[in-house]
Amino acid sequence: MAEIIDGKRIAERCLAETAADIAALRSSGTTPGLAVVLVGSNPASLAYVRSKDKTCREIGMHSRKIELPAETPQAEVLRLIAELNADPAIHGILVQSPPPSQIDEAAIVRAIDPRKDVDGFHPANVAALAMDDPSAMVPCTPLGCLELLRAHGIATAGARAVVVGRSLIVGKPMALLLLAKGTDATVTVAHSRTKDLPAVCREADILIAALGRPEFLGAEHVREGAVVIDVGINRVGDSTDPRGYRLVGDVDFEAVAPKCRAITPVPGGVGPMTIAMLMRNTLRACRNITGKS
Ligand code: NAP
Image 1 (cartoon, helix red, strand yellow):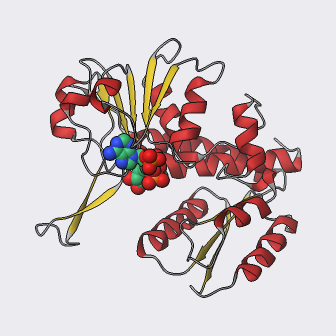
Image 2 (tube, rainbow, N blue to C red):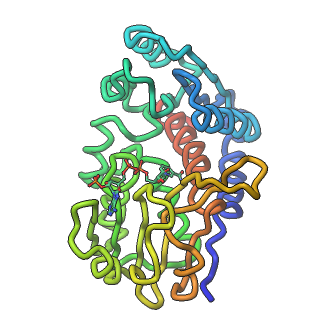
């Protein structure tokens, strides 16, 4: 049976390290600050924003949670971003995705000071990651996946990695991180037009699933002894659960786990790491901006 990669435990360790670093910074008079902006009241987004705010407070970080009505115009969000860019108490800015349709998300991301772009979505940070520039702010979810591999001593150098999904949030930055000098994997990126996906996936020593399709990848996609990182978070109806749904990944865990060397569960795998990496990115942004360590 596969080793289970316990993202919750690893995230707790990362958060404890970040909390200790924050305590040291605070004793020299600097408190890292994160502003999380939510436009509208999408229930999943509300839950994410509240959990980010709570985690900030738990680890001693200054948190500003800004909830705006769904009909807020683009110009007002841009005004808020300008205010946060200029606020010395704020070192990280995040606008929760997806915003309502009147908001041009790409324009909002471009308006964020790249040094405060703790999501790593600003074009300057995307370019820096592609250029192996260590100053890049790297998106939290792929960063969390890499941390899970490192925490389990899974070697990436020379390994064949297959990333299923090419989004700007997960797939593309994940591929760039795996490809970067120092990580040194041989990377394939698959997507909805990939021919013979099972055969492509079976080439992987490390398979990263980020499709947003519940339990889509099965035993036929996984080579014996592969490491599987399941980024997917999907709600599927479940009348036995009081919420009426349960969370599943993009991987059919029961079918795949017996073939793997190691695998992340959902929930409790990549999810907790995303928030831990957000806190780490905010601490890093604070150090970069203030010059204090
Ligand atoms: P997304 O923007 O919808 O992208 C999905 C990608 O998967 C696309 O590139 C798409 O290909 C590809 N794809 C879809 N169906 C496919 C198929 N049948 N075969 C091969 N490729 C296929 O999704 P995302 O934002 O990257 O998120 C992916 C999953 O990760 C979701 O379940 C999301 O909830 C989850 N997620 C989790 C975290 C976390 O913290 N754990 C964070 C972010 C996202 P095309 O480009 O060809 O359409």
